[in-house]
Amino acid sequence: MICCDTHLHSAFSSDSEAPMEDMIKEGIRLGLKTICFTEHFDPDYPDNPEGLDFLPDFKNYKETLFTLKEKYAPEIEVLYGLEIGVQPHLGGTLSDFYRQYGQDFDFIINSCHIVKGMDPYDGVYFNEMTPHEGIETYFETILSNLKVFPDYQAAGHLDYVCRYLPENSPLFVYGDFREILDAILNEIISAGKGLEVNTAGLKYGMDWPNPHISILKRYRELGGEIITIGSDGHKPKHMAWEFQKLPGILKKAGFSHYAIFRKKKPVFYKL
Image (cartoon, rainbow, N blue to C red; front, top):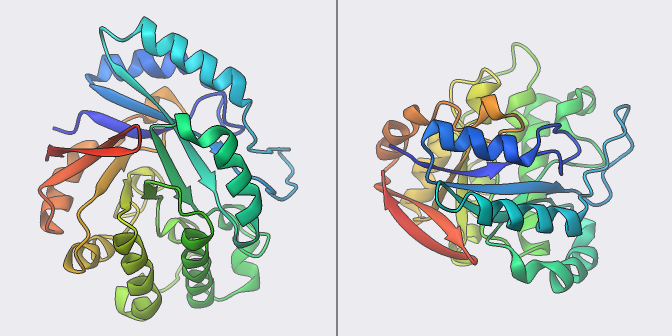
């Protein structure tokens, strides 16, 4: 049983209304031993109809989390994390941010949400590109992002773009993107970083978590060992989403352990 959810959002993220304490209480109810909040930080996120800016109030986020961490310590471990939406031009901004705030986090996820000023979530993305072009461009951006911001512990939802493919798009096949995906996975491995398995793909109706099992298998073949697990839950009801499916998927991909980061150091647990 997987008892840790290390990708969670609360009302400190622009796209969530869930009080942090409600998320913690649900984690306890679910029997989780450890949770990590990874609030969104997406500098230079484009203007959008919802007015989401993805710029958390870091002072209140930290104060609230550490107060609740202490309050619920007898029942659940609460870790302090962040999901950074990296873009290739943000190197200086993120370097400055990390010097100011980064040392206190347990866990930082390097995620790609914006490509060429567009979030695939919004639908406009695939009006501009074919499915193959859109996926390839997304992966090319990830490779740049991993180099632009190296102070992360895991690469998040690596094939996020596939959640939003137009209807009747060809199925994702690793071989169609082998060169760029191998480059990404080798970059992650050589840097000693981890790869996140994110079950929001299942929540969005996909047949797999993000990333696809073929990506997980290739990561393992290339020598990758560090896997983190998160639901990407923005509401209590989405926490630990379909976690019961993950041991079988991960074992099939060649893994026997997953990791939790504390103070940016991985601790491994058997599946």
